[in-house]
Image 1 (cartoon, rainbow, N blue to C red):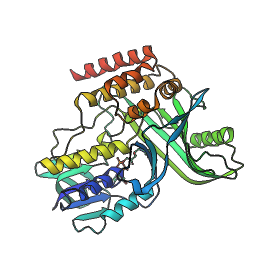
Image 2 (cartoon, rainbow, N blue to C red):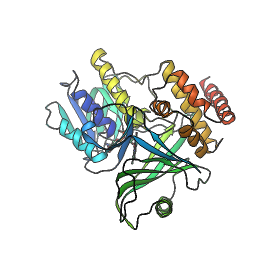
Image 3 (tube, helix red, strand yellow):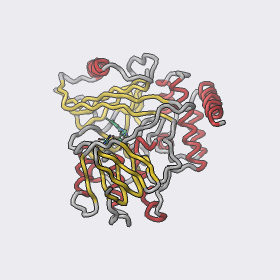
Image 4 (spheres, rainbow, N blue to C red):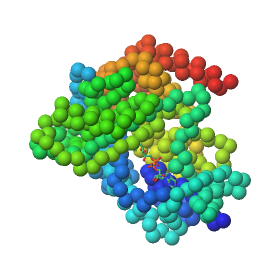
Length: 387
Ligand SMILES: Cc1cc2nc3c(=O)[nH]c(=O)nc-3n(C[C@H](O)[C@H](O)[C@H](O)COP(=O)(O)OP(=O)(O)OC[C@H]3O[C@@H](n4cnc5c(N)ncnc54)[C@H](O)[C@@H]3O)c2cc1C
């Protein structure tokens, strides 16, 4: 069985980011095997995230914005993004960038194959591909997904379909994405449009739903056509690209121990922020910490907790509970969030950088009774399954 220092199972966003950070750290000479079932040569997604200042992927930022628009049921607001910039990276640019940095390094092997299993053993993590097996001291797993069956946890799906369209008329404000547009039928879920303008005639228009079940394929297309007809003066349009996805919004943590050698990362590692589905920036933060600790101690850092982390997580759990049990209109909750908070605090809150006092200010903008009920219900549920 061939042994490596590190195996990265899944070379998507998290796997490639990890490999990139390792290649720029004091671990850069470690032998690494990175395995993905596909060569990552399609623009299969776009990532948007909030960032203050320049980040590691500055050279491949496709678009960035410093004002965003929010549309509630009846009102709209334009918000400056304070010290943050809302940045967009296209999947294909990210994959190309990472491959360019990693290909050719003598200690990094990239393999396209379907991984059949990943096992924790005393000797190391074992990754199996057909008849072949590979072993490493550290196996970073971004392919196994979140388990969905442990009781006491809450699960919701964020599912969406988007079209990149080009229009016959100028109809987009290239300086201002629509972060959430709730002027659509809610069907007792949380449904909104998300619009990222590339220029006056090109934009990604995305229909997003938070619910327990995904929709029929044609339902997304119908909603997209209706929104474009109702709210965009296109003069006709063509669909250039499509993207779709399902992101787990869950407060379930991956089984974390007592595994020594196999560590989950990315969506599989529970890096997705449960209340928003944002994963990109959290993954970058967690992986940079992980690599730093691995380099310093020989052991990868687990996801940070501490009191601050615990409070942020508790807020997410309560928020999920409100959405899942439909305790209050989601459109109204987001309208309050975007219109009753100082933008500086709002974006710090979304990036989990707020102080406890700032958290309280945001909480104060929420309807009290549904959130208190959700807090009590979440606490009782967690306690029931803890003992
Ligand atoms: C369309 C879309 C848009 C998104 N937009 C945003 C956004 O704007 N902002 C944000 O923060 N988050 C966003 N997300 C959520 C999240 O950032 C992405 O899903 C991100 O790609 C997760 O990274 P990951 O490495 O965990 O998973 P992935 O990037 O999906 O990587 C997993 C990799 O594992 C490989 N793989 C899976 N099974 C096997 C196997 N058996 N053998 C070998 N290889 C395997 C896959 O080919 C894939 O390359 C989006 C998700 C989607 C789907």
